Amino acid sequence: MEKKIVIGCDHAAVELKNKVIAHVEGMGYEVIDVGTYTSDSCNYPDIAETACKKIQTGEVPMGILICGTGIGMSMSANKMRGIRAACCSDTFSAAATRSHNDANVLCFGARVVGEGVAMTLVDAFLTTEYEGGRHQTRIDMMMALEGKY
Image (cartoon, rainbow, N blue to C red; front, side, top):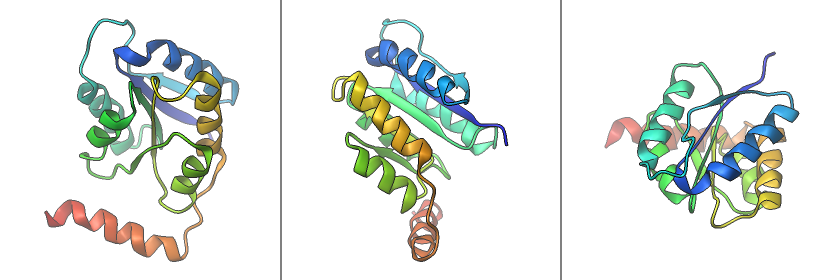
């Protein structure tokens, strides 16, 4: 199975995004980089939308979004149908959101975590499998909220 992932950032995280891309490529992933590519101010909802569309269409199964705090990216991503984005700053949460919530987007903040922590978050997220079972009922309930309100 080919491993593909989409990665995007806003102007606050270009340098960290490039390091994450190199790390993920080293793990054997093909990376689709949806920007941004400079430190010129941009709008994180645009990047989140571009990245998450690739997940919605099935082009990639997962994504990583980075902004200053990770919060804006996660809030934007979670507005899109089928996206389960989690803003994480510790490895326990990054692994738990995969194993229990089947999260498909990892978000974190370049101004919150350093390079070392960022790489451990990425590793935990990408190497943890969804457990299924009892968690599926809750995921089904969560995803039903998209169409309910």
